[in-house]
Length: 120
Figure 1 (cartoon, rainbow, N blue to C red):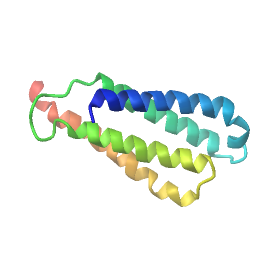
Figure 2: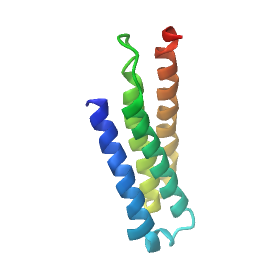
Figure 3: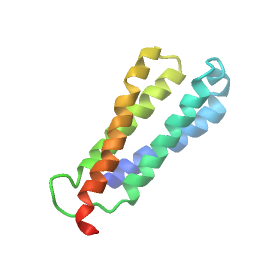
């Protein structure tokens, strides 16, 4: 998938879910003490990585050049998705999967740095 398409979809999803959580789900999220924080964190990370995907200029060529896009895309879906699900009452064992998404986000940033090392 084109990184700008992915950025647009993730960004739109983040804004929509952020607004929905703040207004449409306010009472539901209040039922679980951690739910509002999970929702806010999921939205923040999803939006930050959508902006990063849309804004970065990937170094040309190289085997690793597109990997940050894949890591951020999947990492955002896994990290934010599990937090959204738990905030809506899904089993808390999903919290064991959330760090895998976070790890993919971190790996994406490290791969971006590695791919850009020749530019400095």
